[in-house]
Image (cartoon, rainbow, N blue to C red; front, side):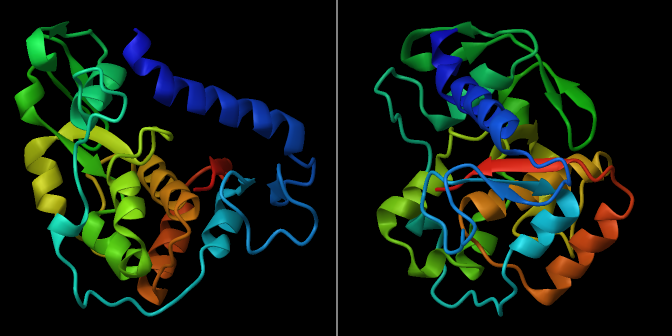
Length: 231
C-alpha cells in the first residue's frame, strides 16, 4: 500500500547504504562522513556490530526535571492522507491488512506483537510503543530539544525500530522504564537492538546502569550489525 512507502523506503535506503559502507573487519563505518566522523550531521549513516554500537552511545547522567508527556506532540498526520502516526504504524506492521474506512478507521486485520509473541486481531488491543520511552528520551537528551524535534521523534516513521505495535497491556506494564529495569518476556535481542538503533538515530545518551544492562544482554545475542541513519 502507498501508505507504507515512508517506512519501507527508509528501510531499503538504509540497506543500500550498508552495502556500500560496511568494512570487512566489522569495525564501525559511516556512509556520509570521513575518518573524523564525530560529531555527525543528520543524515549520516552509522553501521557497526551491536557491541560497538552500544559503546557509540555516550554515557551521561540522566535527569527527568521538567518532563511532561505533553511536550511530545503525538500522532500527527504528517502526509495529510487522513491516517495519523498510530494508523500508519498499524497499516505498515499488519500481517493481515485491516479494512480502512473513513477517517482511517481500521477494522479486522492481524498483528504480531514481538514483545510477547502474541497475534492480535483487534487494533484496539495494541499500543504503539516508543521503544525508547518518551520520558527516557527526555532524560537522555530531549530536554534540550526544540518542540519540533520532540514531535519528530514522537512520530518517527523513518525507521521501523522507533515505533512498534505491541500488546497494550504489556506496553503499559513497561511504562517509562529503561532496559536496566524492564525487558519484554521474549525477543530480548531484537528489543535491545531496536533500543540501541533508536538511541543512535536520535543522538541520545545512556546512563551507566543502562549500558551495563545492554552489554549483559548483548552477550547472549548474535553480534549482528546495527545500521541506522541519524536524525
